[in-house]
Image 1 (cartoon, rainbow, N blue to C red):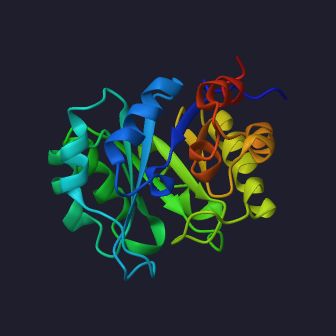
Image 2 (image 1 turned 90 degrees about the horizontal axis):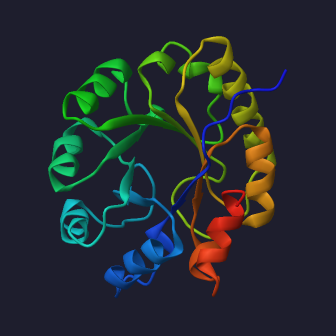
Length: 221
């Protein structure tokens, strides 16, 4: 069976950008033709690393029309959602492993006018999302262990994209399937073949001198 596919979206992760010059990173993303910017928010508790908060999103919001794809790798994500929404996020994903009130959180995000997503770690089965799928705009599959950039993709995680794509088809839903971790041109091809339509790409983007060409190729142009 040929599954329906959404348009491929490239979401460069500023976690891999120069932390001393996020403004330049946003300009590079805009010039590349990528339409989303992925923002990994780490609290030093849910994951060992610590990154940034709403003030950065607010500072960058006026510099670009790109979709701000905010990924909360935090405990108690509910307490942060409003602040990130007010700062200019367009889509907020929180971790299944960090929140008990999944449906309520999704409804809360949507009530603020944002798209809502759930992220799952490599050790979490895709099956846990079945009841939440009708309320989701995006499933973010972590293809590395969350907390650090520059890791190598765990191939078994792509099986989740394949299973979720089939569930999306069978349930006649249209949530996006995002993959995050170890994505480059080679692994992106594998991820798309598995069913992913949203590619979070970090070091492979910022380390490429031809960012526009990279994005075009990833989008199949």
